[in-house]
Length: 213
Image 1 (cartoon, helix red, strand yellow):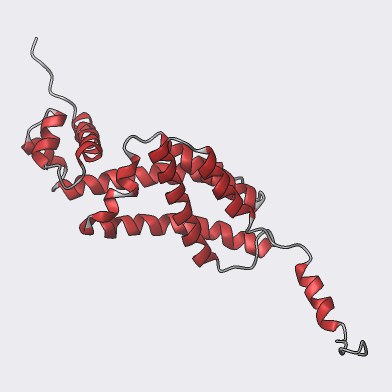
Image 2 (image 1 turned 180 degrees about the vertical axis):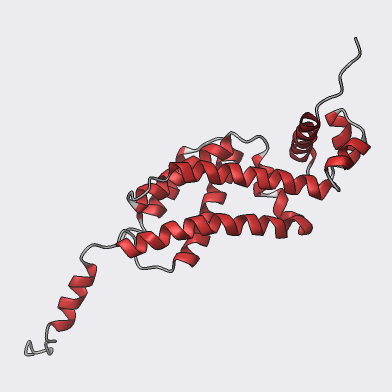
């Protein structure tokens, strides 16, 4: 019986899987198209049928990676729920998703060190920031969070999420990183009654050093 050729979708998935494994093992710069084709068990011609070059493969991997991670984080958010609890759940889902992605450190570190890919990564990151920013903006409006700028806060939080996740991937220990991020999130809580206390203090007459108004 003649051997059947692999299905087109199977071939593309084999190329992506081979590239991801090699990027993790050798690094992006040290991996060639020849290496990827050989690992996938395909010819270079077959590889070029699906991808223009190595950068094109990396972009496809990165897009699929962030799409999957964002979906996991979005599913963890409870519509109308407490903002702080939602942020903690989103981070935990983000961390869990990354821990189940092979060679995730490629997307968190190596990808940003390659100039042609860095711009693509920023576009994906901006889309992620938008989701976090919307959540923060709603939380500030509801009074769940301190009145901070949602755009700046989103960048800080997403950066903290990424670095905490990288710590987990490098050390294999998650408890410390989760505790730190949860503490950061808890520190964003609005101080209930702080505004009223400030208003009362402003209305109180000031006393002189001698104790008289």
